[in-house]
Image (tube, rainbow, N blue to C red):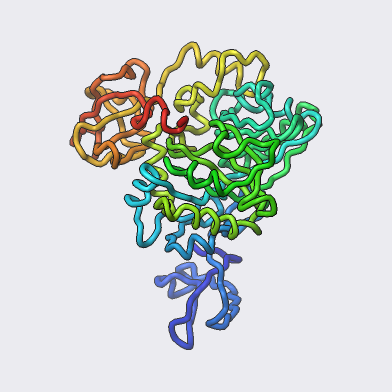
Length: 444
């Protein structure tokens, strides 16, 4: 509904367009006809009008229109079909490829995707480590310079705010990468509340990144990324480590390369300033063509991460879900003795879990979807968090949060659709990840 003060963009199909603020049935004042002033601004047909959706980090924050990453023009040239994702335009799929072809390229060769919408925060100062030790479920004291760790960020009651990766750039300098812009506000509030001398600066708009994933990525990037003698090269870079280097030689574009990803395949992420994004894309794309590299969109990425059993915000976790229920209990080590936000609640939840994230394997090719109810007989015992028809496995699979009483592997359950009773789809509880369960490919 349009409200007074709203802006509406109209494209003129003829020389004159008339607009009214009243509804079609409001023909008299007796029906509540209250016309408002309409201000019309006319643009030339050749004017460049940027489309977007207003995004607010908090209800009080100013609205920010959807923005483009530094890789946008290169993605558009590859036929990207863009969708709005957390304030950025990101490709859902690519014309001429499609989600299926993009998926198989990642599993068998190499792909490249834009993940610049991830939120990045630089955490510095004498108490930077103390702030992250308080905020994260992982033991940040054990994080070495050059190392990356995956962690959960929780509220005091144990529910999750977000998941994140933490990079240790220097003894008192860290980078936190997450999905929610609000994490920066939350960290700043924690620093003030606990009297910590730590500074949290958003670097999302100064640091864009592409992810290069697939079994051929090491062969593609090793000759492309130059690293100084003090840094590991691509061939030597271990899982969840990063290196500093340049694209194309000692005088090339400066980048940070981390051996991280969201696909369950061997892969790397390349981080650079937006002004260098085009040069980085051109170099990576040219180096990847002999290996059959293709661009990858969000549709194919979702299949990849479900097969790999990787959590996604608002699907596997939310503020009502703790890390154990989200399937990332490994990110809450029992060996961490320091108190952190939510530590007491999580200690209790660890001892008495009520729900568990499991894999489901459908015994038919019926479509499964996020939110579908899981039943044991007439009793509802959980719900699907994510689902897809796995191309590599050739069957419908899902991640589901179910009652611990029915979470043992091999147990037969049912998915209830329509009213939950009229249509039932048999499924079997399995371990996850459904694909490469020992993660040998990502560690290769």
